[in-house]
Image 1 (cartoon, rainbow, N blue to C red):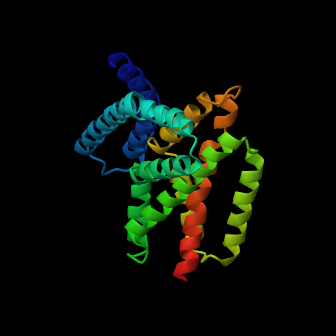
Image 2: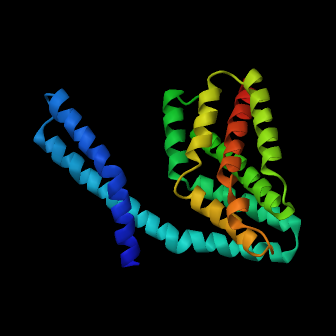
Amino acid sequence: MLSDFKSQLREISQAIVPIILVILIIHTFFIPDFSISNAVLFIIGSIMVIVGIALFLVGVNIGLIPIGNAIGSDIPRSGSIPLIIMTAFLFGFLATVAEPDVRVLSDMIQTISENSIERLHLIMVISVGVGFFVAVAILRIIYNVSLAYLYTGGYLLVLMFLFVAPPDYVPIAFDAGGVTTGPITVPFILSLGIGVTSILGGRSAISDGFGLIGLASIGPILGVLLMGIVAS
């Protein structure tokens, strides 16, 4: 566990430290009233962010990914398609509800829209969309359906909804598709797909898992656009 933490800490530092340096340089040379005390607080906060993300990712590797693999490999053995669909939907839904990026987006949208778009409603719509398409993705793996057909059908629906959805909801919809690719949802969906693939003989986890996250991201886009259509 300690070696895993050190590895995550090194990777996170390599990603975040350059950003910290750029911000400090900009504030030092272009913002005259940037005090030393503010710089110290910023550096302390940045260190806390690096350590916090590293600890979070260690937890994901220790707990979330093994759980996803176990669920993905055990549920298909039941032979019950309704149970597989329900389980995939439920865990896709719950992982998205817990996703920090989704909560940040929903808070920002509620503030900007002056409470005309409720935070809870947006979280539920995004989570249902992800859950639905996670179930579709798992069924695609089981029945070996071409990913191209699902992407084509999904984005054709998106294009259709774009013509009738209110313009204000369009950027929110695509942002919603982006925030679902966060540190909780992505590892869980991928591990769920790998677990399902592991019990199917002669199948490749790489080819079957490819495009899983992209497919799941269609759900929030469609959900938010549909939400806008209903609201209008």
